[in-house]
Length: 171
Image (tube, rainbow, N blue to C red; front, side, top):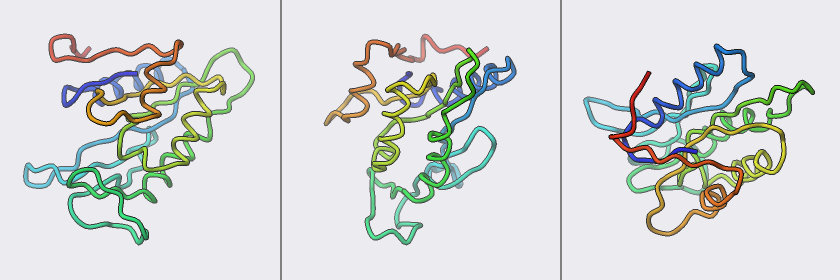
C-alpha cells in the first residue's frame, strides 16, 4: 500500500500495473484520475485497467438519482457509478489453481470509496485469504481514522511505503 498527497501515487500504480501485465501476471483493478476543466479540478473518475471509465465524484450537485448524497468536501460521490465499475473487478479475484497469484490494483481505499459498504466487504474478503495480492493506495492519516484504512495499515502482511517528493522517481 502506498500513501501521499499529490506526488504521483496514481502514476506509480499505473506504471507498476503496466510492468506486471507485460510480465504476464494476471492483473485487474482500477485507479482514480482527476477530472479537470479549464485548469480547475472538477472531480474524479474511476478507470478500470481495461479502460472503462465512470464518475467517482464531481464538484457540486449529484449526478445520480440516489436518495442519499455522499460528500467529501466540495465533491459529491456517485456511489452507483463507482460500484458498477469497481465491484465486479474486486469480486473477480478468484483465479485458477496455478501457483501464480492474481494482482488486484486498488487506487484508492479512501473516504470517497469507503461510502460503499460492498466495497469495504470486497476489500476485506480479498485481504482475508483469496490468494490475491493487492497493490493499492491509502491516504495519509489525518483527522478521524478510517476503520478499513487503519485495519489495512496495521496488518502484519501489509507493507506500507510512504511516497514523498524526494523519494519518487519514475522509470
